[in-house]
Length: 248
Ligand SMILES: [Zn+2]
Ligand SMILES: [Zn+2]
Image 1 (cartoon, rainbow, N blue to C red):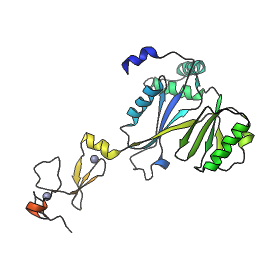
Image 2 (image 1 turned 120 degrees about the horizontal axis):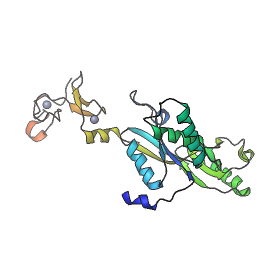
Image 3 (image 1 turned 30 degrees about the horizontal axis):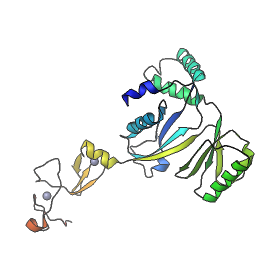
Image 4 (image 1 turned 180 degrees about the vertical axis):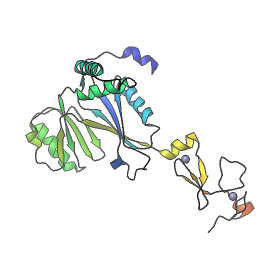
């Protein structure tokens, strides 16, 4: 990764990746978890996609990664940001990068549009594709999203797709890239589960809620405070504390 730096050509425009953790994709979402959104400015697509995945890896849940359909106007974003910094107090002094991303998001070069098909019905997809083809409209990029289809085209007369059920469009939207599931239990496993005894005697992890069985008061290894069984030597009783597996 380190030697990639020399190979990146400067460009006038730039696109942005977004990772979203939304309530509607994460039902029921733990009350401790909030909706989250991270932006990653793309300099080198593969590297930046990896970096974004590293950033979301410690936040459990279902994430959807998207990319802006339009590149951003760098010069206008720069001027807007400089003016913003001059005109306001120091509220962005410790997060200049956040302000830069905000500046980029505010300044799309409106070349493309997103057709958002909010249905997995392949007939609707085919209908839209045929309309585009009949009108000689190029498809810049397309992807299958969890809810349907995303098609990116140069700006066209949107009356062509008006009144088709489940089909909408956006002048500056995001195309779906992929869904990433960050598994809390696996994550917690790596960090070491923090296990406590519930009031009904179970051993449960405070952080990820994983159940380990009955809480064992006598197990010597305190990092694994749950009962263990060995049918051949101890039958149905815990090999440490002797309490039966079937408890009331
Ligand atoms: Zn855990
Ligand atoms: Zn035990």
